[in-house]
Image 1 (cartoon, rainbow, N blue to C red):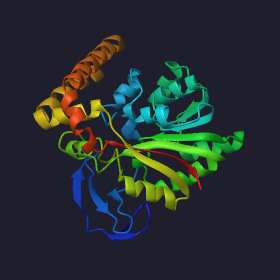
Image 2: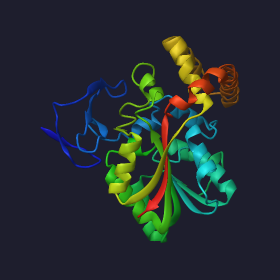
Image 3: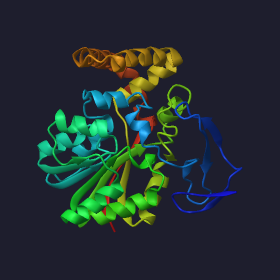
Image 4: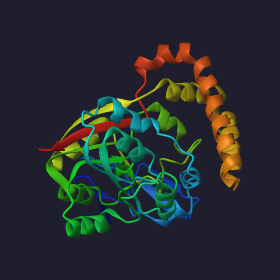
Length: 316
């Protein structure tokens, strides 16, 4: 049996995998493959499970549903590097709407889609966002055709790695973009020591059925180029991220297990006011942790690749 690389269609023998993993969510065995042609990596069986998100298969999704998130670190490069602050913007995988809420303040006409209905409810009810829809990209393309919608900017932060048909995903984006429109987003950086230290050992965020595709900067840039996009690529990193890395190096599973227990107490608590208080308490502790580790973080900063790859560009 052979599998085709989802990024370039190169065929790989099914017995030539890098590693395997059994998911706690569905008890499915997944195998990680490496493409000898494009250097991409992906997990088989390669199939999105939409209910994973609403059923909070990854614990952080309860935070989305509670409506107490802030802008995430992977959003920050957009506000620092992207040069437009107006036009019609679509955020794919908008979740609870924290990013488009801020983009709207800049002057964008914001739209968002996510197949997690609970998150879309938060975006509407808490943030007052109107043009947000609980639907797939395919469904939204049909809606956009009916309404004759085209977009100046399409963003997809931490979304591409979830896709089981990444080439088709970009083709649909082309349909929605204006001729001079831009794409912006991020993916996890598989070459980051941060990602590799976490994966499997302390955290399962970068594993299926949550994430299926694994990118390096080179792989991501080549994939976009082959699909007809010209993009600028850079990795993202912050002192907070590096402080977390140092903490894990020093204390390993002990610090992660402690954080996990604290997070579970927050997420399982149905009292939103109490949940918000505890979440802010963790943020405060993280701030002082980062402050304490700044000298070491500054020293190793130049030698560490960020946990995420930021891209922005347009159709060639």
